[in-house]
Amino acid sequence: MPLENQAVAELRAALHGRVIAPDDSGYDKARTVFYGGIDRRPAVIVRAADDGDVARVITFARDQGLELAVRSGGHSVAGHSVCEGGIVLDLADLRGLEIDAAKRTAWAQAGLTAGEYTTAVGAHGLATGFGDTASVGIGGLTLGGGVGYLGRKHGLTIDALLAADVVTADGKRLRADPETNPDLFWAIRGGGGNFGVATRFHYRLHEVKSIVGGMLVLPATPEVIASFVAEAEAAPEELSTIVNVMTAPPMPFLPAELHGKLVVLAMLVHSGGGEAGERAVAPFRALAAPLADMIRPMRYPEIYPPDAEDYHPVAAARTLFLDVIDRDVAQTMVDHVRASTAQMAVTQIRVLGGAMARVPAEATAYAHRARRVMVNVAALYERPEEKPAHEAWVTGFAAGLRQGAPAAYVNFLGNEGEARVREAYPGSTWDRLVAIKRRYDPGNLFRLNQNIPPGT
Image (cartoon, rainbow, N blue to C red; front, side):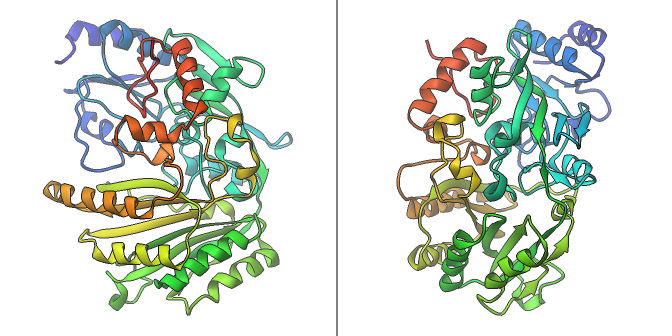
């Protein structure tokens, strides 16, 4: 039901930021998130101007009994960045960034995107490792862990997190760091938005002046895929890769006869650059005659091309961890991608290890440090009636790939149920998170997420 006009007026009077109701201009744009197929109409959207606004919105949602969605960049796979009939707390106007190049640290507000932050600190020859997409908000990405191009050399995003400012369910503004509220600091490094609204992050910066990186497209055979993974595991830690076994999109640099055919489309980043970078990428170029080779020396921010504003993909997807990708597993990938009837089918492979694996599993709420490979399978489609077929495809595909203990990366989870959320937080990690949730959000106000209920 719509909020009473008086409640909206009172909210407007209490806040410094903009309050957007369904009859206001810009409402439809403000409720649109990155992924398509999500058409929810919140009762009101608040573009917070400061931490005080955040605290007031949290209190308002709690007192009104409204569902609360928190949005940074709007990239939630499950669509948690918007709600039906509740209130959206949009952090996009929290864009402050304070860079201390001498100390190699930065304070960044949660409305910044990975691309904006990376460009700004890149002007100083510095970087914090985020994901692989420019328009992703740093808020949700950080809280879930942060697997990206600098992971093997410098760890996950949360491994560079020094502190955060968090507004909790009771409206309190807290600092979370190793000495102040250390339990909260542990939980927000991988536990998602379950414990409050993170409004500002303090990051460590690493020197990354130039890289050797870019796209490499190869023929998709089981031998090429398995060999690529083996080379990625053996590569120096400065090199991170993302491999997509997929039906080729109509990219202008690919010959027309390859469009719709199976290819290996890989992104490579060597964070050291120079001759060492060229040596590191050479074995991948030698796996087969490249169909396209766009690897070159560049500044690190260039690896984040801007996203098209009107791109809103609809996909069925699953995320899982593997320990081995040999020729047989690669053959399974090829067979399943070829069998898909989707507009575009893809298996994405990220070889992990390095710095992220040297952090003890119990040190943060991200508990998959020992897993060697992350895999995501997805089918992109257009018509809603296609969904059941593609959901069945990704379910069967993931089941055919599964190895070892079930596990999931929380930032890539969709609406897949409580059991899958538990797979993101195995063993004692879950119990510890539940206890911290009970302390900071006993009423489960922050439940529109991959939820960790406070229990009893």
